[in-house]
Length: 349
Length: 223
Image 1 (tube, each protein chain N blue to C red):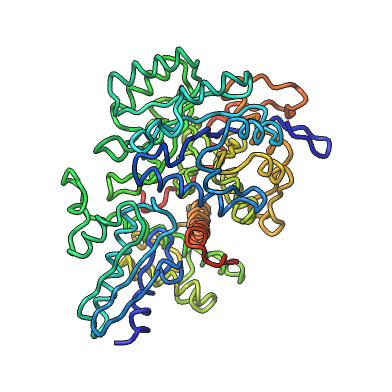
Image 2: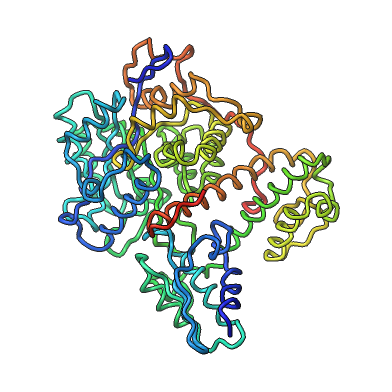
């Protein structure tokens, strides 16, 4: 919970990790490269006083995470997004089991999201069922760039991915968080292409697809599909920290998202431990679109901020939010796209 | 052969995704010239930067340097990247992209990927031109001739012209689609709105990549 200027904000941190990227857990140079890449993100976009050493960043104790999220941070609830990467890390980067055990020690604080990998075939479907039984999943995180032996990536439109999405629907796991990373294969296509999300969102109107990092670096492709698919959402992890170092760019991202998606389908996330919710929430509540951009993008109202910081995610995860945090009209399914769909770019014709 | 000719050749190589010269982006880490041999080292903002774009930049840089008069051997190597070994070996052998990686053999070459991003660059450049024209008070942008645009906003109009040349698009209009057709008045506002998102995305990525490169290699931070 965060309060300022007589307003109270319920905070759902839609994207957090309790990882182990330490050298002891690294299998190969890819595991080392991955955590170092995260560390550069962290160093580049964090305010000076929030920067950690690489050693601190590779692996941090549970107490520190609780402190950063809930004691000095304003998170009411944080969603743990499981990220396995078992080809790169001995015990995985952070698995559902590891996240779940930690979450159980802090009742009411965490939502544990599972994961699936369509390349696990039939056995993986059973494993997903067991994960659901044990952790009562309401969501999963999938990482399409994850390596698995010779395979260097997969797509949500793959036939086996559909089998898993059908299973999610059957189990009541309705929130599918999708993380696009630089897949190695197929090499000749854009690795960050979100066209497969479009495909799956159309095929599964009963599921919600939360595209993490709002499709960055393909904001335009993400906006385009989100306009057409009412069950596509945008997670702001990675976009949020620009609020500090590149506020004008942040204003443009938010402005574009609000135009194409409307304010009911954008979710806050810190991507902890890459960034911390304390400064992100403080800066976001204080943030306004710069005056010279307001003609194009309008302004961010308190209600919009409340929705993005927590109410939208609370609606997806059936969280009970006290009336004092609500906005005048409770968030609802935003229905068909609000931004009028223009002609597609001729290149996509 | 002089160093400035090599530098100028490298400045013609663009990051296809960010639509900027690799020299401006700080991707050229070193240039070494020994009589008629040139060795260029390239670096990227992250260890996991998309391999297909990395390949295009290394291959383009090699072609550009090899074309400099007096160069007998051009070697371009990518540093500290997760598939640097495959890319360096493949480009050195002037192999095609698919052959350097395991593949089902069905992949077309990278031409289509490059085309997609050249079209995005053309779209973004046209959006910048449209803004400049509107700011100068120009009306009926959909019907405006390129000749007129060059007079009103010379620099952004010339930038559009360069991208059209790369794409082989010919049009007498200031704004046109990928087939060279002008936009009817009723389609223009919607197209411009989407074009703006493309421009914001490309510019934002360039800023982010630049920042990550600075962090990764401890360079002075740009404004």
